[in-house]
Length: 242
Picture 1: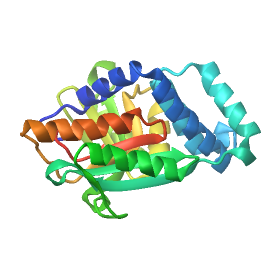
Picture 2 (picture 1 turned 180 degrees about the vertical axis):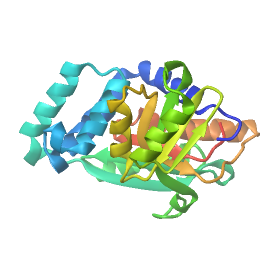
Picture 3 (picture 1 turned 135 degrees about the vertical axis):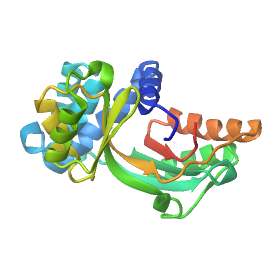
Picture 4 (picture 1 turned 120 degrees about the vertical axis):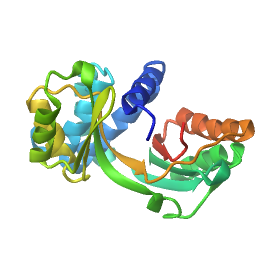
C-alpha cells in the first residue's frame, strides 16, 4: 500500500488480535485441524502444518496449546468436517471484499456473511466477481528493528530460496513469493534466525479504493466488524485504502 507502512498495519492487526485471543486461537485451531487432516500430524512431513505452527507462535499461542490442537486433530481426523468456503462481494463505492471461512455448516456461514454485507450496505457477488482484482502471494514482513542482517544479505537469502520480489520500506522489508514457494522461503529465513513480524499467504489488491464520505467509512467498518466477530471467518481481504 503506497504511502502506508505494512509493518505498522501488521502491528495494528496483531494488537487487535491480542484483544481477542479467543478469536485468533479459534482461527488457528481450525487451520491446524485442516492441515493435519490434509497432510498428517508430523510437522516434519507437512509443510502446511509447519506454516500454521509458525503463524500460531507469531500470535503468541502457547506451545502446549499448539501441541494439544495437533493431537486432538490427529485423533479426530475422520471427524474433522470443516470445509473451506470463499465469498466475494462489494462494499461501498465498489470496494472489493473477499471472505475466506472454515465451517461445519455452510448455510449458517453463508447467512452470517450475507448479513454482514447487507448491514454495511454492501452486497454478495458471484464467485470470481472481485478476486481478479487481487494477486495471491506469500507475503513475509521483517521489521528492521528486529533484523540483524544487512538489507542486501536478506534480499539474497530470500531470492536464493525462491522469493519473487524484495522491497525495503522505512521500517521493514517485504518479501513476496508465489503461494507454492512460500513455505520454502519462510523456512529458509527461519533457519537463518530471521525474525518475521508476519508470514502468510494472502490476497494483495492490485489497486486501492479511497473512501472519504463518513457514511461509506461507517458502512465498510460495519461489514468488517461483523465479519471479524464470526468464528467461521478465517480471513478477510479488501482493497479499501485504510
